[in-house]
Image 1 (cartoon, each protein chain N blue to C red):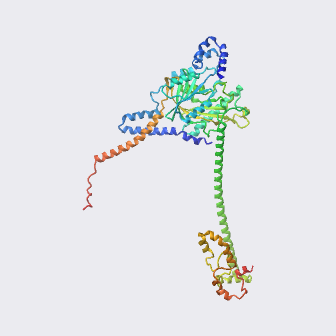
Image 2: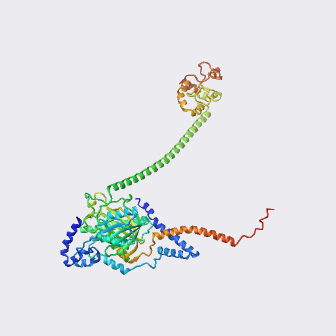
Length: 309
Length: 314
């Protein structure tokens, strides 16, 4: 739980030493070619001391050590309960620079020791862990433990949040895909519809217009140029005679937004009720006004139909 | 108050022991030293052994805050210790420390010596005439770090676990014995608590002693039912502190005496730093040297005159 990532900082020292070792060796090899004997010979020794061979001068007085051990050690028949020490056999050598493995080995050593000790204490009939209602001073204060707890919670929260973000991101991606598929489907649907309509029309054409009169007119309507006449329909917000369909003003009005807003209502009213700018255009006759016989409707033009409603 | 009680105890115990010894032993106060332990063993073999270990814990002046905190953590872990004022880290510190230990009637000493505000040395000494070990301390983490989430009773006796390679060599054996005596809380110490809820792990990896402190936990509401199958549910949570001890030397006396052991692989941090520095210095020197060499080379074999040099000048 986050223990390992703390370690690297710790072991910088060791690594540095290692680096130094290699550097040392380099220096040594260089020194052979370079004429600086006193300095480099010294370094030579250091490198050897640190690395492979132990220095020759080092003292190792085995008898003295053993004697001292005899001196300080407790009598042999001292009960285990006085020492509470347990030896644990490590299965294999641990690599020092592998933080995770090293810590794991310490942990297992402690855990095994605890189990053995627990069995021993159990056989002696001594209490092991404190009962739940035994309150006493702890090594770390409550304030500190509160901090630890808060940190743990914060960590957990952070993890959760990160997970949520990840999930959201994935969901977004998925929804995008779905959306793309949908639009594709829709396009396909539309195409199919159009296709079917075309098919149907072709069929009708082939079968020779068995339908009603309106249909015939519809197809005719495109042929006699009527579609190009100006529609009488006025659009709200667009002044008559404005060819851009009100868009020109919008783009122009970008610079003075405040005024635009105020005017909107008025313009709308104008477009609806009158005062639509110059009257000149309106009063002039056009082709259709001359043709128009008051209120007489020629045929089923689409625009007129709508007007009826 | 504690002192009084101790007196009464000793008085109570002594009559049962041999009487002729007591008069001699009282003024010396070296009873605590284990030098004359064999005698004690002979006298009261039926198991009246009493561990009266007391540890003096101090540090040098101008110690780093981090190392000071480490020392305080150790103090909080050892209920049988006495903390004392900082000691000047001079060459004569051994004598003063010995005096101090005697004054405080302690039997061993942990002395945290900080040099140059960055290197921490730990002296572990048995006081009257026992051996002393000097360690270089590496990889220090204090208990205050928030990543170490465990907690345990203050003063409960720690279980001490050692890796098996402590028994391989004489010097490791000696160090182990010292650790057992110094870090183990005496049984029925008046400040100790009758439960076992933490465990120290001492392990030798890469010729260093690594120290860890774990809290023993079992799942909720089962602490009283550990007996039944709680054994495999037992888990450990690290409490801290952490440190790594690199033994440098073992001396015969306390803070001095003949050297019994010397770590053959040891390079002092000073030397390491010096090397580093020298290397950096060497870089520039090399550059200069290369330059001069180049110059000499150019002077030694000049270019032949170019026959086409004036070709375009005419």
